[in-house]
Image 1 (cartoon, rainbow, N blue to C red):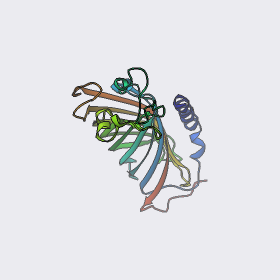
Image 2 (image 1 turned 180 degrees about the horizontal axis):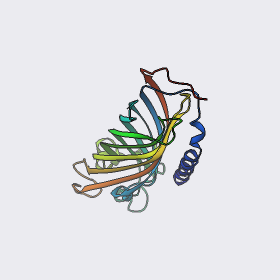
Image 3 (image 1 turned 120 degrees about the vertical axis):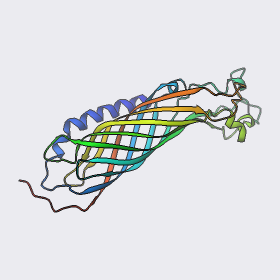
Length: 255
């Protein structure tokens, strides 16, 4: 299912870029400095050490940009919540020597689940390079940023058969909570419509996280994990922008 979402987002990316010129023709001009509230959805493929732990990663997020009228420089921040259902680490193998994990009811906890949870939070700078003289506020968007990347394995208990071994503080010995400095790059298309009604971003995002396990001890491995990690995430982002123009001049009407 998650792979289908990635495929659909990629197709949407190329479709919107190919048709974007149809939005550029308008009689009004979107002038002035701009504060943009951004709301995004994305899907990504992990690489590096992250691919050994998780599968396809989905994300939802928000952020804010200041886009200058002169030169379209971008100064902003963003935050994304990451989630997914594919966890490759067999962290509960030691609790299931016969293939089953038994709960308090002395029967298998069949609804026990593992899931990915995490986030990215950081700032960025960049620029919009116009592709049309009809709309100089839209075009190729490139941003570079840095922030914090964090991820962990979420253990979801079987509601009908609680497992004490992974409850409370014990869960911290299995969740592989990891975080650290991350670099982020975005390359895509930004549309700020002349009519101020159609505003969106779509493109590719690249994250490189220099993380480390922050738990003092992994119970299932019976050791402390002090290895340095390189977590990579490559994804497609689609976003809606709510613009607020500041100090907008009257502009001219083109026919």
